Structures are given as structure tokens and as C-alpha cells.
Image (cartoon, rainbow, N blue to C red):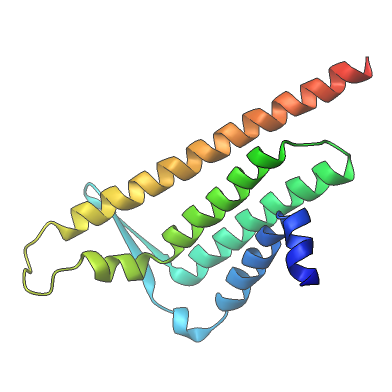
Length: 153
């Protein structure tokens, strides 16, 4: 119960937990396959290990920013903070489980279906929503910094 109370008071530690989880599972040999992204006539082949390492770095950066804002006593709105934390984790977990969604959209009876098209649209929407959430969060942090600087003068 102490852990849940701590997470309830400081939910940004979930970024640290998820970042450590992605970092640890990226070293397992089960993740030796690749992520193939097709954009027009170009294929990008990314090892899943690198993809998970990227997400762990992103999670660590988010954790560091929240940790430093607490350290320098920059108070954030709890409602906005929870939306950012849980929304970001939701989109990251959706995007990191791409193989599950690939199997979900794949129709084994129809080899010539447009399932990859729908999967690409699904991932595009997830990425756009994730980026929009981060832009709003960055603008909010800039607003808080200006507010703190103006309050000092």
C-alpha cells in the first residue's frame, strides 16, 4: 500500500518504472526481430531493441523533467499533470505493442487486404495524439516558467 500511496502522490515515477521496464526487456534475446515501416517507396528497418531503447530514453527524459520541476518547486496543476502522465503512458504502451495490433488487423483469409493501410493509419493517429500531448505539455511548462520568473520580479 505504501507504494500505491507514493505513486498517487508522485505519479511521474511511473515514467521511471516504465523506462526501466523497456530498458530491461530490450536486452532480452526474444526481441531480435525488426520493425519495418513503409513510407511511400522507402522501407525503414528498425531493430525492436533500438525501438524499446528509444522509448526508455523518452520515459527517462519525462521523469527527469518532472523530478526537476519538483526539485525547483515549480508547482503544476495535478489534473493536467495526471492527464499528461497517464495519456503519455497509454499512447506509449499502445505504440510499443505494435505486433499485437499487427496480428489484430491481419486477416489470414485475405492475402491482398488493406490491413497494413489501416494499421498505418492507426499508428499515425497514435503518434499524432502523442506528439500533440507533448507539445501542449511543453507549452504549459514554458507558461509555468514565465509565471515563476514574473513572480520573482
